Image (cartoon, rainbow, N blue to C red; front, top):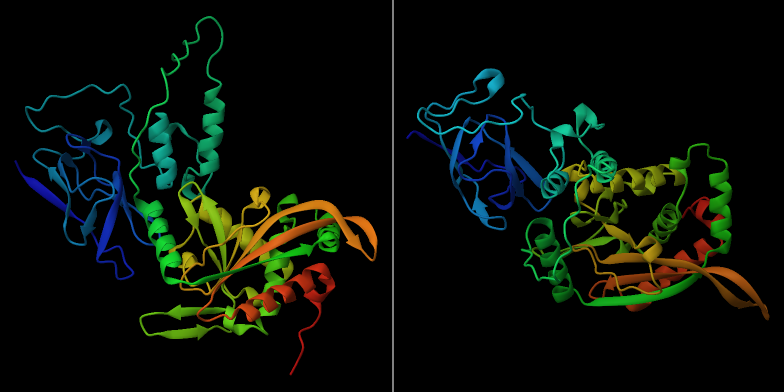
Length: 405
């Protein structure tokens, strides 16, 4: 038997080891050159690895969640007699048993994200059958969901297959904490362990802001370009940070140095199928309301469909997080280290408010903020939120020219 050892390559950014995220092969599988064998997890993303050779898998380095050093053996192949044999695919080694495949049509590598690939495998769906609308025919999350929605209805009538019998009862299952979920868990634990959080909540009357938002959206012909509350909050926060630079900072604990940033690289906490990601809008302080809204929309969607670039997941100086319609009344946002501030948006609700001795129905929303109390005094954190509140309650202030010294 002639062996070929596929070693874990350098995945860049100074990575010396990586975590096995998922295998798409198993021992005994015949693999063609350029077939995707699995994913490796870095701190930034899941990286798909392709086989550099055709052969039969004889050994895998470990299970999902195991850590492998760069340069260590990842997959071992038996390459005796295994070559790419034209339309029929790789030729089996001499004397080896063969299994007829129902579909001998050659299939190229289907481009998609690891999350979509995993969902397809769990659902028993061949990704080659899913039409891809992404660049180069890439199968996006929306493509996969549309395909599933179209096939889930299935055949009907007397010849339709019977549904599976119901389960006898609930069962427990073990879910290994690996990949992005493990990284999130470690970072959250480190943030709550190392950072003394100071949380401040303020209610805001956004009745006028909502009226302005609806007015501006009524002028837009493309519904995709309509504004949410986030870009207004982003602009108000950017203006407030000019007077509270200590809140737009990151802490380098290795050097014991606090870095106050002139630029605002805005992190947007985004829930994805793979867990929480924080894509970054760089130099948000230079953007108009429409440009900021477009940038937030772009990086959020890219984070969800895994088309986000690695460099767009690092370098934020302050983060906004929102639970959308599930925003609740109050939340306690966990600081995205090494930042020192985070602002959370809660749900907006109409309720009666006393104004000038009269009861009026107003649209109210809470902002829940957290600060690193080592570097942001409670008074300064509260004062910054009060400044943001003033601008959101009187939204014309967001667009007034900045004061010159």
